[in-house]
Image (cartoon, rainbow over all chains, first blue to last red; front, side, top):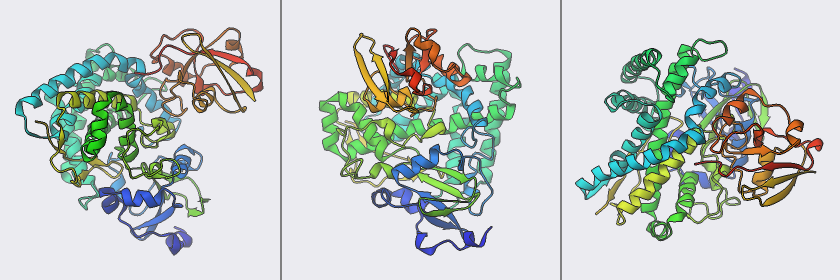
Length: 412
Length: 108
């Protein structure tokens, strides 16, 4: 490490618990940071760069010459290895990234998703039917959003039978418990390692099954056919691809409708407006995406020494880009703390799904499922409201994610 | 400036002009052409900027590369021989006046 790196300009160091206090209730920080130049936070005595302005986050995420997604050894980064250093699509740069992503792409194209729309609608009805029977108070995350996310991703997209879901849901839970910076641990533990090994065994079994008996239009079957071929996917990459698909997919698909319902029930005027004008659903989804993306941050690593927007960056330094802070820039979104489903926002301009080559591959699926889920929720339970509209939600998720863990609602 | 003519599925035409180096997708989004979605922001990742390059213009655009070829298999509307993703079509002076037809639908 260079001396300058060990002693960064103190005027550019912010003493803040980014992945704890900020993540729990980020809005006052977002309001300030939307117009704040890049700064450092210190971890284990070394600086890491934080980018929060709209243009800064986009610049970092699209600049592949100066910023890499490949993890680098650096003090204070043990909590970043929540995918166990596997060769994932997220932790790679082109051309590896391009090759790995290409294998996932067919499952998420608009053409493929169009064929799933009716099946998702039918499944959402079934889940809502089961909720109606119990009546009264529900936990929207556990009772509605999560089962719908699991059915959508594991059954409809990945063809995994329901009896095998616990392998993946246990892994997600163990990963969140181990790597949640909110709980103060933020690194691998024995429970996570065991869940990881079980998931690895399960993936190996599925791969063998699909190799022996491929299923038409099935994601895993298509991937298996490419293993080992020249320029194709390796066995380790296949496992990493399935792993990230399951884990990241379950999280993101559960979180999007949950955050939207939290926002709507926190702001009953906006909920009433949406119920009076159901075609505002896209605006409501975009506004929730602006304020409450599933992604909290994306991390890159500097490929060299350079200055970025006035901040000295050193080779190997982690550079954190916050996913939502730029969405609170008052010049782009006037009165940014106000939840307003009538804003004329183009969701593509938000950094909520990331930006650049790593833009979330599941974004279309997430928007499709969330629209159906929330439309049908409001139609089925027109009196839906928060048990406590002012509740401060419990947050969970690994470093990069920000998920609401429970949402008590009244539906009678 | 390079002129692009967009022809909607219903036959309505829109013209827009962009600087060389801009992509046809980028031009369409900034000009508010509704028939182009461009969900991923122009990184050949989403297949929602599908266009049909009309007539001899198809001979003047750069050749299809592997990733675009793969993504074109996932467009909502039918893939034809002249199908391209507009994010991969960079405006150059020799494309001035290019006419692209828009499919009926880009996304779900």
